[in-house]
Amino acid sequence: MALADFYEVRLQISFLAKSCYLVFHVRRLSGEFDASDVMNAYIASVQPELAAAMVTDAKILAAYVWNLGVEDDFHYADLDVPGTVIGDPMPTHDAATLRFPTLTRAINHGYKRIPGLAEIYVEDGMLIGSQKDALTALGAAIFTVWADGTPQNVCSYSVLKRIYFLNPKSGKWQYRLPKTDEELLWYEPLGCVLDEIVRTQNTRKKRV
Image 1 (cartoon, rainbow, N blue to C red):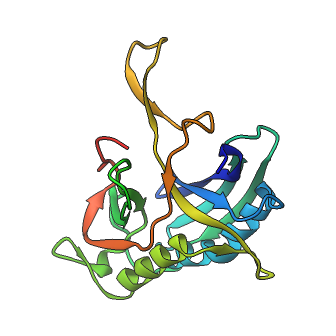
Image 2 (image 1 turned 90 degrees about the horizontal axis):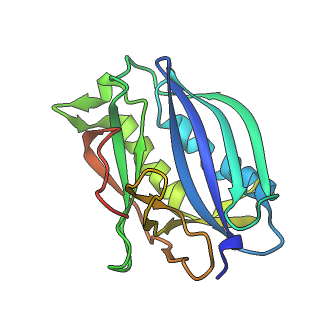
Image 3 (image 1 turned 120 degrees about the vertical axis):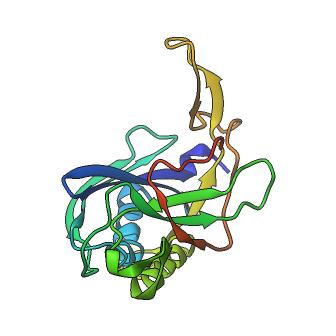
């Protein structure tokens, strides 16, 4: 598998006058597909479930897709898609957590933090009701093969191992995505687990 088979999908989300980003990495299922095909697959397979899992105060503003191994293979789309959950919003730092279990000890679990929770669907710090169901459906849509509107299977969600390196400019150890085929290490999760406890946007794993 080559680095050029993987794409980053970066979503810009506005929520209560703040911006946040939701990032996915996907593997294309055929070399004939490019960034525009991945964008179409996201819009058809994942975006409806994401909108259904967030309050109306949250809005998907734009999406960026680019190939990790080919610089001129990229695509951008203005979206302006609001959430559909009715209810007073929780604070911006609160989020639901989707966990994508690892299949190897070489890479940690994949996580996604989803903003836009409604107070009515949180009880004693736990997710409840229809928004909980919508978040479960979103997790399933993410790890299931992404198809475009044809429908044609285009790509699948993947978790990539990041490289721990010493930044010569800052003198600090940091993480980055792989830059070569030799650095590439990845897995495709077989499922998704919704954490019923409401977490925060800054709850992060220590390493990748």
